[in-house]
Amino acid sequence: MKPIHNIDKWFSWMDELAEQNYVVIDDFIDNNLYKEIKNFLFDKIDVFDQAGIGALNQNTIKKTIRGDKTYWLNKERDQELHVFWDLLAETKSTLNRYCYLSLSGDEFHLAHYPSGGYYARHLDQFDGRNNRMISMIIYLNENWEPGDGGQLEILDKNRELQLVDPIAKRCVLFKSDKVPHAVLKSFKDRYSLTGWLLYQPTNLAPILG
Image (cartoon, rainbow, N blue to C red; front, side):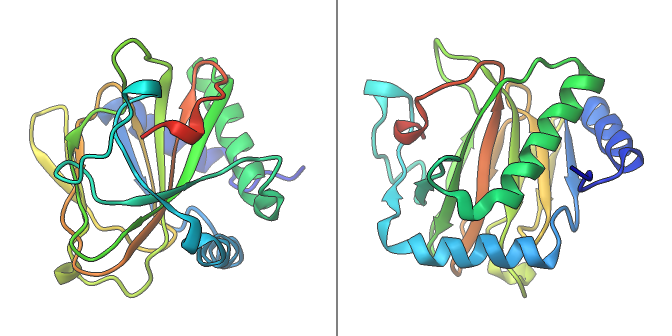
């Protein structure tokens, strides 16, 4: 299979990820894949569930902490997204080969923040479960304006806040256990494909926050 991104791009992105614990990549997906994911999202939007926090039997709905709705993806079921699954395989393979991460699983969902939705600052790790290694977000919002809110707020290595606009085809990769982050209040519908690259495979995705 032909790589989606060439290795020089990957080296640049991996260097930045290693140096500052996160990297922002514009045009990570092309127009065709963007349309495929967005169309799939709107086909499923009526069956999105209110997102909770925590894992397993500790998963609870707390709208004071997060206000998004999600649809958990499954590679076997959601084969319409085969190009995304190929891109995900390339991402894991590249990180494993050059960053020695031993990634062997993933969990991903589509996310919808309605107007007024936000997610308070947190780390992408659970007590007693630390196999999320790399967080990955692909944004699905064309014509996003600064006044629309919904930025990803990252607390960087220097304890300074960095804001990332959720613009279409932009990807953010960051170390799940190193980067506190929040989603600021959105003032219109905000969409993303969000997930985690795991140290071990898991069957827990449908009930995770």
